[in-house]
Every structure is written in structure tokens, then in C-alpha cells.
Length: 300
Image 1: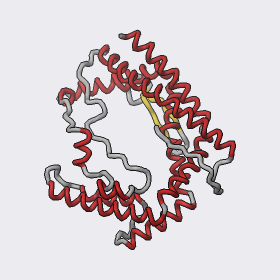
Image 2: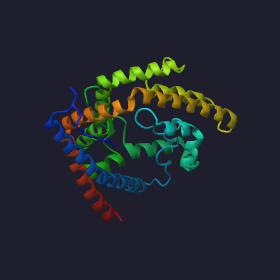
Image 3: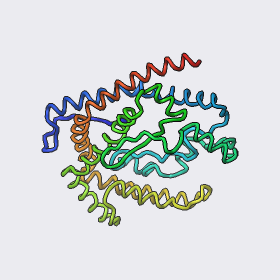
Image 4: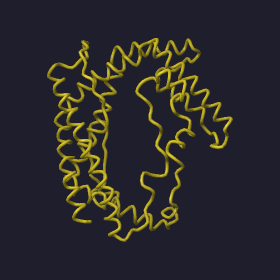
């Protein structure tokens, strides 16, 4: 989870108080400090889960990470003019394939009988009716409380409900609350309205935000065959044209500057609000990293 926090000296009604700013800085420092130990814990988690599954007699596994490629990430707000002219929003599927390489899935797991796949899932995640659940007001999230994954997580993180609550807060709540704060920011609303009017003047009416513009651009690739180069070229030209208009309107409306300022203000408030949970997450990841080293040495 990455959240770029910029605590500048801007003065608006939405700006965090001095105490909130200090709290936010402590929370951001805790997030930064947790990243390395979190990665160490994740690396160990994968190895230990695999060893657990082998110990239960499973020797054939699905491709880790799934068969589908992740969606390309876009930058915050509108693209720069340089990026827009070069790659648009980076949506061309050929670009993703070139960067990640062609994925060849091992068919061994796919070719297993359904009963073997079901047994693998049960050993990995436990029964569907055995779940640890965290309710966060707007919904709930659950993970298995038995099976190899749960057994390994208990050894690394301890109480699964505490792990689930802190993980959800750090990776979801902080980001979603920050996004809500940005969306409500008066400066962002004003700049976005000006941006949308500029896009309409460019012949792209009905587009309300850069995300809408990117979605509009992505539709050009719908249903195209990977081998249909002329059609893909045409879709890419359309994507770049939309992105260039987006970038120009962002410059005229100062949209990206408004978004950056609003993000700093919203992040400061949200990080301050969740400081204790973020610090608890850092401490949990530090402990998990130590547990990971001990467990890997024990089982090596």
C-alpha cells in the first residue's frame, strides 16, 4: 500500500490542524517503516503455505497470481501531455503484453479432475462456512480460519481477526477515505467542472472526469482480436487523441494541481484518524517478519 503524503503549508478550510499534521506524519512514517517487513512476511507466507500443502500431499499447483494479467495502472488525475502523446493512458493490450511477456500457464493443475481441484481448495482455504469476518460499517470482509493459508497466517500474525482488521484499514479504508475527501474538496470540484467544460468544447461532451475519459478510451479495444493490428492501431490513435484533449484541459483547468493539493489535505486528516491502527500494523508486520525468519529456519 502506497500513499504519497505531502504536508505543505497551504491554508484552506480543509487543511489539517497542527496536531493532525503531526499525527499524520507519525502515521506515514509507520507506513513507510512497515513496507519492508510486510514484504518479508508475504514472501515467507507463500513459501510456508506451499510447504504446508506439500505436507498434505499436494504436488501440483495453479499458477500463482492467477491466469489473468493485471490491469495497467494509471497515474493520479490526468496524464501529462508528454505521456498522452506517447501512450495515451497506457491501455493498448499490446503494450501490456510486451512489458510483462507472454504468460504461459502450466496446464497441469487445469487438467486435474474436479475432485482433485476441490480437495486442493479445501486444504488451502478450509471450508466455506469457517470464516473470520471483520465488519467495517459499510460492509464486511472475510478470510478462512482453517486450511494451510489460515494456519500459516496464525503463525506469522497471531490473531486472524486483528490481522484482518488492520490489513483492511491500511490497504482499503485509508485509501477510500482519502478518495472521499478528495472528491468533496471544493477546489477539486471547481477544477473538474472547468475541465469537463473544456472537454465538451473539444467535442467530448458528457465526460465528467479523467477516469471517465480513460474508460471512454478503453472501449475502443472492446472485442478486438489480438492479431488485428489495423484495428488496434486505430483504437490506440483514438485513445491518444482523447488523452491529449484530457491533458490539455487539465493544464487549462489546473486540475492536477488541485488534486495534488486536495490529496495532501485529505490524507493528513485520514492518516491522523487512523494513526493508532497504522502504528499497530507496523508493529504487527515487524513481529511477523521475525516470525517468518524463525519459521523458515525451522522448516528448512
